[in-house]
Amino acid sequence: MSFEYIKSQQKKWEKKWRTQWELEAKEEEERLAKLAAEKRRQKEIAIQKKLLREQQEAERFRQERLRDKERLTGQKWEKQCDILLAQIKERFQEESRLEEIRVIIKNREPTLQVLDWTSWLLSDPLNQRLADIDLEQAMEMYKQDNLIAQRRKGTRGKGKAINYALAFTGDRSGATKTFVSTTFNPDTYSLWNGFTVSFWVRPDEEMNQKSVILGTRASSPVARFHFGLSGAGANNIGVGIGGNDVTGINNPMEIGQWYNWVISYTGTQHSAGDRKLRMWINTDARMTSNNSTAWNNQDEATESYTHGIYFGGRNTEGSGYTSGFACALDEVAIYNTCIDSDGTFASEVYNAGSGYNHKNNSHSDNLVGYWRFNEGGGTIAKDLSGNGNHGTLTTDGTGLPTWIKTPKGYGQ
Image 1: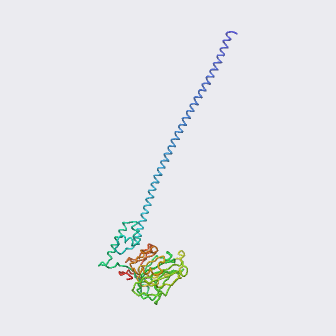
Image 2: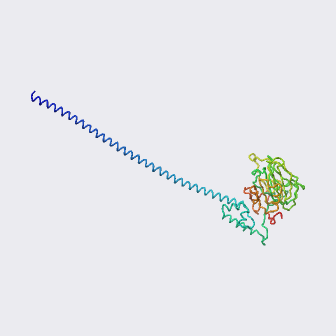
């Protein structure tokens, strides 16, 4: 083997090794490039993940701030709503208070006598209620009542306070047919379950025909609630209750004299024998044995007739004002319970005269109608029971009922 051959082979091997080395170097370079690229990719992914986390954190923080803002806004709105509702409630309470004050002032009646503060409060439950809700207004009314009472005294300081009543003309030929219409409906207060009526009356004409002092009469079904005279004769007093027209009651009255009537009824809910209808004129019992008076309750929903009672005559279904009576009337009080069975209440009212105040007795919670006629003028007779069934002075002819003074009172 020659040297040249060996040298040739050596060159071949060196070329082969160099090619092999270059190939390996290239592969290593490619591998390192891939590693670098992967490293860069992983770094970019890490950067993107970090950025995403930062964005998510920023969004979470933003959402929390929005929720906090909404919560604060909601709390502020709720607070504003609470303030607004409180103001509305306070305004409503104030309006209700003022309305109650107006109702009290409208329905209460001046005491007509000089009283100290305590006596004034006790003289009328409305006075005490007024003091409870507005002491300043109550004190003004107290001063006003005493001022009116002082002015109404006699010029020598010993005259009695003036009492007013209403006088009616009746419906005889030539009469002006005056009366007072009211919205007081006996059915509204279920008077068939018991009642007491008290009033003062002065006959001003001959009592020889059917005449009604006050009341109403429905026709279908028949429902009476009227008191007066049934016709001529000594026993001509008539009392109409429910389906009953009780007549033949002795009449002790004289023209021009004042008399107190009290009529009481225990109620149709009792069995026959206990449905007691009683009557007193002054302190004298005029009906003592009527124990079976029935009064069927009325179905207002099926009736077109309004049963408002009249004073000075009767409100008759289909006719209106009928059976007028020339008389003077005062202190009409209606209770929705039977108070008297033995004449005690009748004596109490009669002995007190025109000064008796039905709002100050132990039965005042059952007082459903009360007309004192102390307005002394105008066309309205106030219902002082608080139920607002005020009377309107009117006529079926010409003129109006007349306000009259009765300074000496009754039962004297």
